[in-house]
Amino acid sequence: MSTQFRASYYQHNGSSITTAPSLHSCSSFIISKLPDHPLSGNKRSLLLGTSLSFNSNKETTSVIRRRKRKNFEHGIVASSSNVATPIWESWKPQKGSSNPSLSDILWPSAGAFAAMAILGKMDQILAPKGFSITIAPLGAVCAVLFATPSTPAARKYNVFMSQIGCAAIGVLAFSIFGPGWLARSAGLAASIAFMIYARAPHPPAASLPILFIDGVKLHSLNFWYALFPGAAGCIILCLIQEIVCYLKDNVKF
Image (cartoon, rainbow, N blue to C red):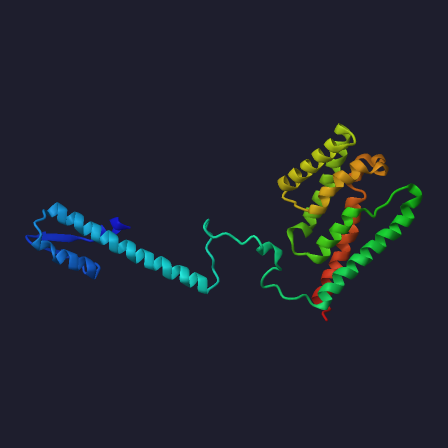
C-alpha cells in the first residue's frame, strides 16, 4: 500500500517539495517543515515515503473498520480463526426456523405409519418363505424421507446407491472375515468410504452391513441382500414420500 502512495510524484526545488494534490494534509504539514531541517534530497524522499505509508495504513484501517461495521449491520459475518462458535450453540434449536405447523407434523407421521403398515402386510405374505421386509434401517429411512425431504440424504440417488452398495459390502465383509467384530468394523468402514466416494451420503445405509453380519436368517440371501429387503423397501418408501410431500405443500392446517 505504501508503494502505491509513494507512486504520487513529488518535485524537489531547492528548499520546497511540491506534492500531488491528493496527498493527505498531514503529509503536507510534515513536508512544509522540511526546509528548516538540513536534510538531503534522499532523506527528504525517505521521510516523505514513511509519512505517506503511515497515512495510507491509517486510511486502510479505517476503511476495513467501516466495511466490517457495514457487514455486521447486514448480518454478514466474516470467517476468522479468532472467532470461535460457542460450544453450546449446537445444543440449541436452529436460529431463524419457525415453529412447524400441525400439518407439517401430521403428514410425515402419517406417512411413516402407512409405510410400516404396508411393509408389515408384506411380511405376512412373505412369512411362509421365511423372509421379512421390515428391517430396522427402514425406520431411519422413513425419518430421512418424510421429515427432511430436502436434505442430500433424501435424494433418490443417495438412497438407492447407498442401500445397494452398503448391503453388498456387508455380504462381502461377512464372506471374507466371517461373523465377529472384524467383519462389522471392516464392513462399516468400507460402507462409509463408499458413500463418500460415490457422493451418496445416506446414514441409514451404514447399518446394513452390521444387520447382515449379525442376522443369521439373512445369510441365505447372499448377494441378493443388496436388493432385498433394503432397496426393495426403499421403493415403497419413496412412493409414499411423494404423497407426503404433496400433502404437506397443498393441504395445510
